[in-house]
Length: 527
Figure 1 (cartoon, rainbow, N blue to C red):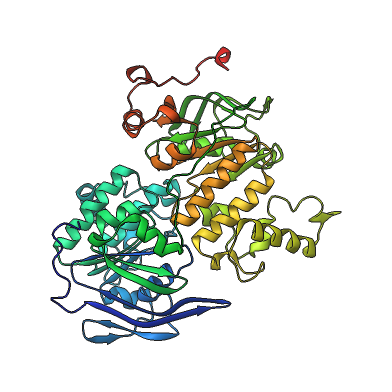
Figure 2 (cartoon, rainbow, N blue to C red; figure 1 turned 180 degrees about the vertical axis):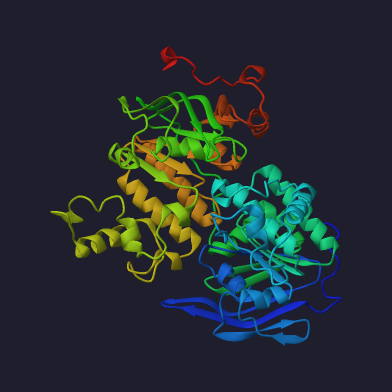
């Protein structure tokens, strides 16, 4: 979209934020920030996790009141005291952490809180309107499905559809592609183009440099709560932007030693499991993961990745098949039994499943270790030892938090993910199941996460890495297994893999049709 950008100086900004300052206890999130947005442009907002991007946009969306500064729409000074005020001014936001009611349907969530909604809404008409939007933008989702039945990626589609359904002149998208497949990201590009063509403006928060270059007209870089640069996208490049974000050179490729796989640690034999709707999610799935290797799992969202992680970690029962860890039968074991067998789990939903937002960072770090000494003695928690334990992990993993007793919900997304990583890696004795571990993280935090996964591999543990980021899988994994409709279509050694081959398997091509691809083991003897 950077091709054919019109000069941005010919008209006044449609939005001006001046001197915006926002403080939290122990944190200066926004420090006198100035930002301009022009009609019909996509402005990318870049910065490390914790740089203040989401805070600034939450001020614009009416969730936070600034401690200082002003906001002007056109030439009019406006006060935005609530999300409803923002909506009435034509400002809408898709949040990084979903704002959905799990027990309500897709359609109910999309229209929830709309001021002009009739007391008895015509749901059939609403369903038709949502289906039309879904088809128009390629964001396919069942309007009558309940939110709790949807994958993380499908829930993100609902958030985007909610914004499109309500219509806004200024759209704020906070990490909207973090849970989308490459094909869905391409479709989002078409959405942005259509919105621009109507003269609407977009602020697009992302950590993915390729999307900044592809989607934005200008880019504003934040670091430690301040604007450090604003550039026309056509006049910059990913390496320069990464350096501006983190204040140092960032390695986009991580050097790793060849894997030295040891004994078999995890075995899945002919596993079948259903999804939340009672439909088959895993179909005769067989896999082997060995100590000292990272097995990557690729696939388009909704092809069994979530269910695979849940059966391995004891969160979902299987209908048939076997699960073995360290040679012991762990079929349908409870989550606690899986923890005791040395399994660590980095879940896809870091706020809903990975942490308890209202609990302190220290308590979140202790969740896997609080049952036994030294954190507990004779069934009594030892607070001083929990704090000492937490401080050691905070230092080792570089978690940025005012204190160990700060509620984890006040941390940035990257620091919440570091908290989960620290806890799971500390408790992991054999197998680490990592589900989208770098989703929504900036380039610096992503680099750190990937290095941690490689450290676990080199320490002799087995790592199962589930990701929709093919570049991540090709960079970190030693082998890649591709799921399609709950089956393993083929397994590719990373050294000989390429995006085209993996993409063909993701679309349902058989392993036998492709060079260098092996089928999943299908018999007991194959293990």
